[in-house]
Image 1 (tube, rainbow, N blue to C red):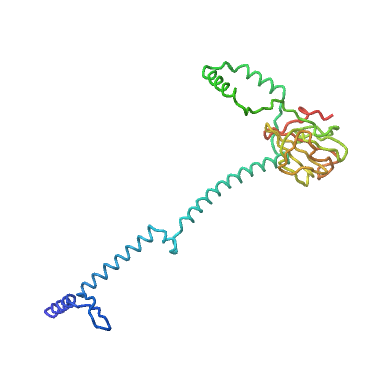
Image 2 (image 1 turned 135 degrees about the vertical axis):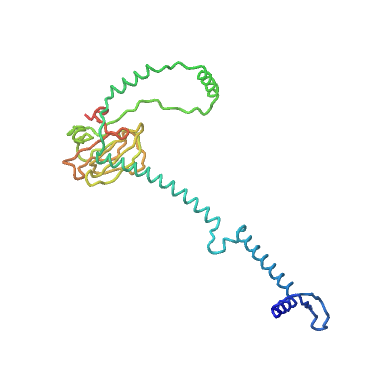
Length: 289
C-alpha cells in the first residue's frame, strides 16, 4: 500500500514539476522569450486547443457553405435545382395526361368508338327559347348602377374592341351524291359523298388542323377543330394540302378527294361531324347537293 502511495506521489510530483521554455537568439544567446510550464499545464492547454478546434470545425461544417465541399453533403444550389425539376416533372406529367386524353378522343373519332347521341336542331332551339322565357331578365338596382358606370367609362374609350356578331354557318366540303347515309346503329358516323377524283375538299368552317396524316384504313385523313366544340373529319383523300397546326378559313381547300385506304370502294369523301365528343348527322346542317 505504501508503494502505491509513493508511486501516486511521484506521478503528481512529475505533473507539477516546473520547467522553463526559453527561446534564445542563436547568434548572441540572448534570451528572447521564456515560459514557465508544467506537464499539467501543457496537457490542459493541448486539451483546450483540441476542444476549440473540434468546435470550430463543427461550426464551419454546419453553418457555412464550406460543408458543400465535404463528401456526403449536398449543395444548396443542387437542392434548389432538384426542387425546380420536381415541380417541372409534376407539370409535365399533368400535360402528358391531358395530351393522352386528347389523343384518345382523336383516336375515338378516327375509329368511331363512341356512343351516339341524336341531335334535333329544332327541339334544341325550342328548348332554349322556353328556358329564356322562364328567366327573369329585369335588371336589379346594383346591375343598373354598374351598367351606367361602364357606359360612362366606355364613352371616352378610344380602344373599343369590335365584336363579330354572326351566326355559325357550315359549308359543304364537296358537292355530290351521298352513297351512304349517317347510320348510328351500324356505327357509320358519317356521310359518304361520291365525287370525281381530285375534287377540291374545302373546310366546312374556320378552324385549326389538329390531325393531317396517313392511316391504313382511311388513307389520307385531315381533322379540323372549330369553335363551339365542333370537329370535322375528312377521310380517303388523295392529297392533303394542310399540315397539323395550320389555321384554315371556311371554304379554303384543305385536300383533294381520292380512293386511299383499305376501307374504300371508289373515289369519295368520308365526312364526319362531332359536337363536344358526340357524332352528329352532317345532313342536318349541310346540303351536299
